[in-house]
Length: 337
View 1 (cartoon, rainbow, N blue to C red):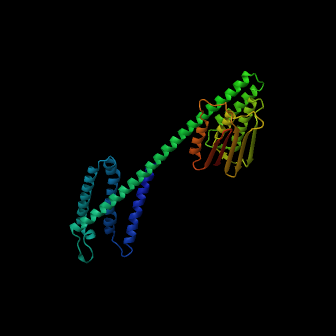
View 2: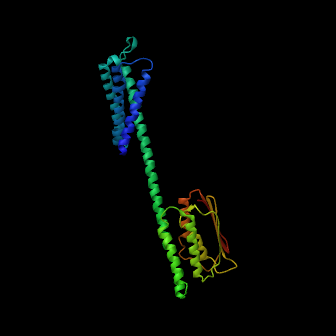
View 3: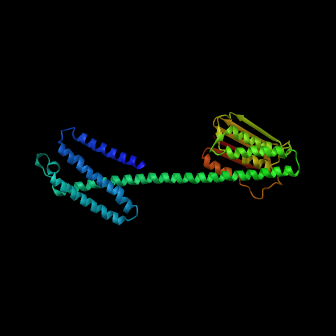
């Protein structure tokens, strides 16, 4: 179907061009039909044939395969043969081609030089079109490959989130079960709600901001269960969150790190979390007191994952500021939704 449309547009272009030439030529005087057939049908057909011989055969078979010497030799040969062929036709239709007003007759040398320039013009047109189309196709292929690469990378980054989150959450529930806490069933239920969101509602590139914030709230509730309601967090959401969308699972790593590396059980220094939505801008702020004895030996993947996803999904549309001080750790993220 695509090739049919290409053929249609090529035919349409040449028909329009030839019709335009005939129209312009007849503005001054009426041209006989036979002369129109020779000058505006036969010779243009020969030039168009030269155009497509170079476009469809010579360029792909020789030039694109870097057989430059062979290509140049064939081009010169084609120019000469087409020039001789055109002169042979001119001798047959000399009254239309070679004989002009006032009895002036065009000689072989003058005619042949004119055909050389005409042939070179159509060869140049076909070469320019071929290179332009190849360039655009190559650009599209490169964009498609880049999009596929980015999609694969994003899928890989997202696939890392679930095991990472699940590993941390199961550790928390294990602690509750080890302590035989009565809140263990509630924690398992909360985790199932979180996992349901992560597995079934986060498959799109973006999700409703309200659902994402509810997911964050569920995670915070799970942590409060883990700390036996002794996890202190000052969590505020301000602004209009309805009818807004955000890349899923983007903010959770910062909150995970606050609970994992910070002091969450001190009412004097609670984890401070603020999410402010202003039209199409989201401002995320979280600060926690650092727990000096809590270090992740494996280094984790959360922050690097988030930074990479931000670069891929919000290029030039976000600002991330991480302030790692002696006693506190602060993250501020601003992005255009």
